[in-house]
Amino acid sequence: MKKSDVVKMLLKERLFANPKNSKVEAFAPTNIALCKYWGKRDPELNLPVTSSLSISLANLGASVSLNVAAEDKIVLNNQLVDPQSSFSIRLVEFLDLVRLNRSPHLEINIISTVPIAAGLASSACGFAAITLALNKLYDWELTGRELSILARLGSGSACRSIWNGFVEWNSGIRSDGMDSHGSVIHHHWPELCMGLVLLSQQEKSISSRKAMERTVNTSPLYSAWPAKVAQDLSLIKQAITVHDFKLLGKTAEFNAMTMHATMLSAWPPVSYYLPETMMAMEKVWALRAEGLDLYFTQDAGPNIKLLFLKKDFSEVQLHFPQLQSVNLF
Ligand code: PMV
Image (cartoon, rainbow, N blue to C red; front, side, top):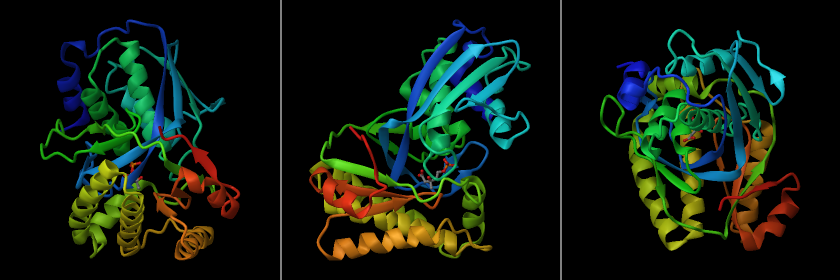
């Protein structure tokens, strides 16, 4: 099955209709997985091997403005994007799923408040925001589930960036992926904090797409991953329900470490570690040994995200002066 078949199922008679508006804007938050998505059962449709669960960073994400124009033009953080770049090609391919013969041409302005391709899910919020903007441009009136499925075709983790708060992406079992989308876990946890520790803004060495494929195909440890995720998902959901921070932190960190271990055991090895990443991790472990409730998670990049409770904010900041605190709720 191809992406275009899925889009046809989602939009039905609305596919290729003319835009109802000429200029729209949308924002989507980035999301950080507490239980990770690593590995696809269908690379074309970005269908995952396992379910996953994230928290959205309410004030960090992508703002997109779309307007009908004389030619396609993409501007990212006020800089014109080279149409031959992989960024542009991927984005235009996504737009072409809903356009006939590249019509209408669109001018897209993206302002991303997260560093691009540094493992901070910039593609997740980017594709989610573009999906929300297209929904407005064409007045499709898609449901959250449908928006999530459409965003997933751009980038897997984008399907969780349609909402704020905790979002679970159910892997689904259908080959058309109509059951593989995000849904909100309604739980408010205002004491829960996340902070970004930005160690490098360089583009990642290998895309998550390629890295996942290599891990699935070559890592002898990958077969243990689905069972680990099933266990972690259930623990994280339990932790969220009863606001058990230690359980949440431990499970999220353990899950991230296991994901990176499967990558390290791929061939050629996939490593997103920098020496600074290791130093930050060691610091977290040392502080925890001294009694501070501090945990971390790491995605497809060298930066780490700290998890802690609001009451410990000043102490965490003392040890990580570069901490960028983010709003979760
Ligand atoms: O959706 P992608 O291709 O950006 O992959 C995201 C992979 C991780 O960030 C490492 C894990 C996750 O669940 O977000």
